[in-house]
Image (cartoon, rainbow, N blue to C red):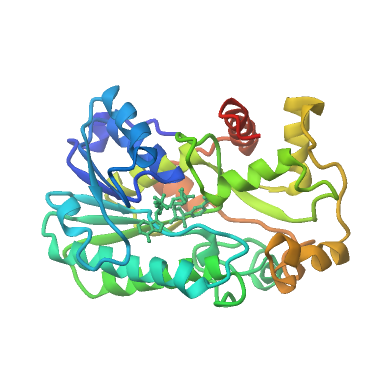
Length: 355
Ligand code: NAP
């Protein structure tokens, strides 16, 4: 949780958040505005109230000022105007679709990589920027849970890179590892700004907009809609609260000594544990899963869930552990418990009429 004072953060200067209407970015914009920053935020269409109304409402109640800009990741010159005068660029925009993608190159890989190139080349042209914080993912750290057997101590850490995802196997993770590698390459070829990367696990917690389409919302919603009526596989997620992810971005920007990559995972929970947390809090009103699917059934059913059989085979039934000590020691992160994120997330879906 963010405990720093405005003073510790230094004088608020203008900052840019790409994809400012996104699930994670909306919380980041909110925190920055609360801290008094002038926030430049890009959205795809600033004339679409579904992308902007919640941000404008937050800005109206905050000391910071919000300016909205239209920007598309594929546009090489799309980010220059929004970036002018900014000291920090938070590059969060990237497509987040975990399953059922028919054309991964067009839908995920090209926007993630071209977008990262376009944003960072705009940074190269913008003399005021001194730091870029990139929202990567644990998907850039590892490809499949089975790989944990090859780690030195049974934990994934920031020295690990996903070397097994591809266009046909976890294309979303592939888009994230390619984009992060590209960001390090571009950062390494200049010396007017530095790069700090955050690698969140599955981000959970309430969304600030009912129009949020992030995979995070779908994952929790599925627990309450009967999607898992046959049961849940023995899969695990490294979970982090969306409010902590926003705070970690700010700490990554404002901590002078921050460097490299930071895994953001509070704890790893099984799908059975997530279901139990929801059942304990919301009782029998929703069809939360009770049964565990045997692995062979989960593998068999994978295509129905928009997943490859190999993706399920290499993840179900394996432990998943992350070393989050860098974020704790360098950034001072004290992660909230995932159960609070899960409960608040589902409550918000109820309040918004989405379950
Ligand atoms: P989100 O709500 O879907 O946000 C993604 C943002 O990227 C949206 O603003 C989206 O705009 C924008 N975007 C996508 N394609 C674009 C394009 N071609 N041009 C311009 N903007 C585009 O997802 P999120 O969960 O907040 O994810 C934010 C970041 O966190 C991503 O980089 C993601 O990889 C990373 N991350 C997320 C999680 C998680 O569990 N959610 C975990 C680890 C890392 P539209 O709203 O117009 O589509």
